[in-house]
Length: 216
Image 1 (cartoon, one colour):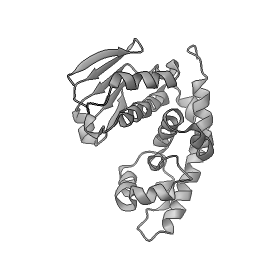
Image 2: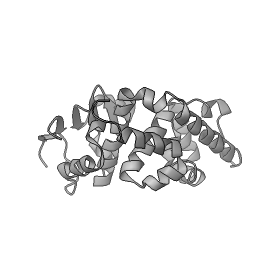
Image 3: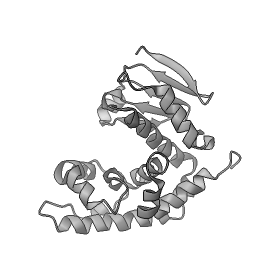
């Protein structure tokens, strides 16, 4: 695949400067996303860049929303669903800027998240592995130390088992913002029923966002 440029939804610039697996059709993926997400939820997205970016290499991230653009690091994209989910996840992060008060203003998502974090803390105390202090589990901001602990010390297989009825997916445990974005992603691209059962406040907030109008 050669480098390509096109417009998504007639207004969002899409640049692909790096080869992806041959079976991945970016335009088809974006059409699928556009058919599922209300158009006003894309209001903060100006561009999508797929390529190798130094700022992403330094942060060791595979996808990022920054300054109106979604950046995708292609080396981590193995399937069409990987790319689809990364884009929708970053759309969720873009909404945190546009609708921060609506999402977090009443504190309901934070309360739901912290209850789940403490459930995870108690579950980990029962396992025969080192565990971090309770203060880490009460900090809603992203922490590289906490993320590394979940990934390298606990391990995602065990984390998936411990969080199966607490978080929609293990990555939602890493921070409040990732909890929201992970729920948003699964609401549209996974099973919204799971989001409703496991994270009812996230389900309610995403549903409210979907029902907003362009004029809001």
